[in-house]
Image 1 (cartoon, rainbow, N blue to C red):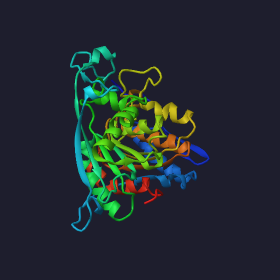
Image 2 (image 1 turned 90 degrees about the horizontal axis):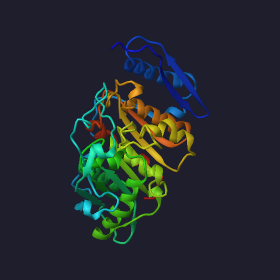
Image 3 (image 1 turned 45 degrees about the vertical axis):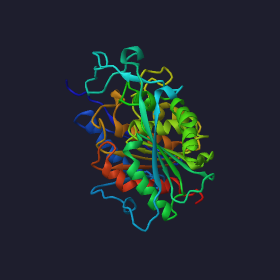
Image 4 (image 1 turned 30 degrees about the vertical axis):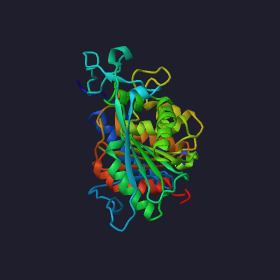
Length: 369
């Protein structure tokens, strides 16, 4: 099938205006988009968008672990704990699992899974999830601590503990508790993880706020701040979309977001008529049409992240979605920082090891120590 000839475009925002660049080029749509994206970075300077673009950063390999990711013998270390939550203990998520049928195996021409009615893609099933809790060195029981909630928690326990140990010891972030939560299992449409992370609603935020955090406080004798400026949500991929969704629907609970390779694409399933394109609707409709919320966002994407060559019509191109997310946030004057990592893939571990300490410090830069 021959690629359609069409214009590739990219929107460059700036304080007080928007520059729109359109490119006519040969090749497939992904190639034209990448040309437009590169030229847009140049156009941002040419049209006077320089000051606003200070929040958009391009980094390149080689990627190296930040010094803060290395433990030091003379540095106080927090403690790491864990407990299990089962589906029987949750009123919000009683548990599902993804079916493996001809319907759920359907893909579009680019390999993206197609949504299906809920009863055709999943069935009730129990789950067990592990929750990891980092308590900073020197925490005084009974005092209210800032909070970092991390999705897909097991993937981040070592990195979060190392970064927080260093940053807290150096008084660069407040002494915070980190709650790192595993999903209920599976991935994408029809799975428990997909239901929790890719659904554009307040359901997951309510689960964390009303079922997970009270148990953390009870088990470990910690008190968590109620101040949303002291509460952040973090994740990678769909976990990043979940982190943003937590803050979007409940900014009175979560005022900061840290996103790696955010799944701001159409992966919600079952489909919701209110958001027919899932998290893609954040940058396409919801952010532009809604007064700015008190949320601070640090976000990253790899230049060769998932489906970076897919056309817009799939609603499944990660770099395109994150670019547009940043443009939407910029246009509404959000406090954000957007990092594009050259040559990097999806939730790139080398990029995380280099950028995580700086991202945490940037998010917490004005919070009392």
